[in-house]
Amino acid sequence: MKALFLATGNPGKLRELTGLLQGLAWQLHPKPEALELAETGTTFTENADLKASQLARAQGAWAIADDSGLEVVALGGDPGVYSARYGTTDQERIERLLGALGDNPQRRARFVCVVSLANPQGEVVHRGEGVCEGEVLPVPRGQGGFGYDPVFYVPAWGLTYAEMPPDLKQRISHRGQALAQVLPYLRAWA
Image (cartoon, helix red, strand yellow):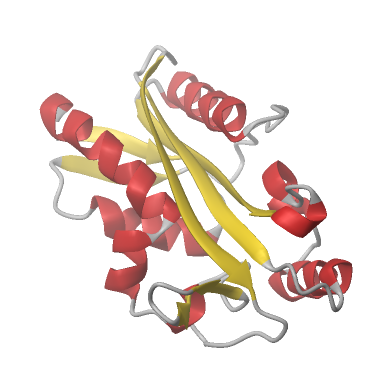
């Protein structure tokens, strides 16, 4: 069974990725805690590629990385690639986002994700992209998920990400969509 390293230190994202990759003929490993991965890109694609390449080369094994974030129309696409750096905790990030939006009635937003798969030489061999359209609620709802999930509302389902059962979120989320495009390649190379 081949090793596949997951390039994230975020516990919520690690749980989500592990759940989405269950049942594959790969031995899943988290990124070593001591290994720092640079996120110096200005796009989701650049950051996902950087993280996957660095981790694959460092471990001499296959690696998968995602970069994702929330783009809010009224904020000109912010926080975007800086979503994780919009505060030091999930609560801080949500408070800053809601403060920036204030009473603005324009709440349209979307979650974007790029997943990159790199071979042991650090070459990105495949990439998937996913988008989930929604809006930012003025008040958090739900107890599940992580990050901005309590304020990201998906009108088509009438729920925030934090209110969704994990299997529904995995199926419709930006990360689930992006990973679904990479899964056939993971199955073929297992």
